[in-house]
Amino acid sequence: TASQPTFAQQTLTLNKLACLFYATEELLMDQVSLAGLVERAVPQEIAFKVEDAVIEGTGSGQPLGILNAPATVSQAKTSGQTATTITAANIENMWSRMYASSRSNMVWLINQDCEPQLTQMTTGDQAIYLPPLGLSDTPFSRLYNRPVIATEYNATLGTVGDIMAVDLSQYMLIDKGAVRGDSSMHVRFLYDERAFRWMYRCDGQPMWNAALTPFKGSSNTQSPFITLATRS
Image (cartoon, rainbow, N blue to C red; front, side):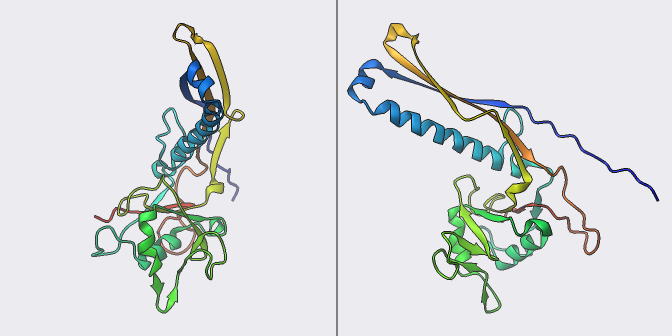
């Protein structure tokens, strides 16, 4: 029977992220390395804001973050689970919801407060977590043999987003060139201050607009983006 494919249209609109900094001319003359220091530090902070938006952005005037995306699957906690804990059963259930084709690309993003929960984690007599520079032989820890990356963007232990299984190849980000920096002595000429300005335009969102219901098997949906529900 003939059928027609269905396509979804996604719209990405470049949003402007800007930073403005003033410095007196005396300060710039007395501290000759200040301008260079600021010009390095501000783009790093802009990158921080963009990366944070990729995780928890609202999609309004900024990228749509994974935590707020309709395709993200929230795995329920286990029955009777203690607050602010992560168990091996949680990890097994999250792994089972990861879209099969994304497993080879996925990473675990965690808040560092989660690490004590992971270090003793086993299934039977098999460790499912390997610390860095040990048996994992990588700069990252390994959980289900996938890299574990601690970030400042993950939520505190026990809340949604403290641990996430994500395939970032399924997140689409666009920009308009690199961070652009300019300076001017005219903006605050009367105050003998120089203005430094940086701008970056970008937008992003997950490529998936909904979680996938498997063709066969259980009715549990699958996705390249898995979180763990609140444990409180």
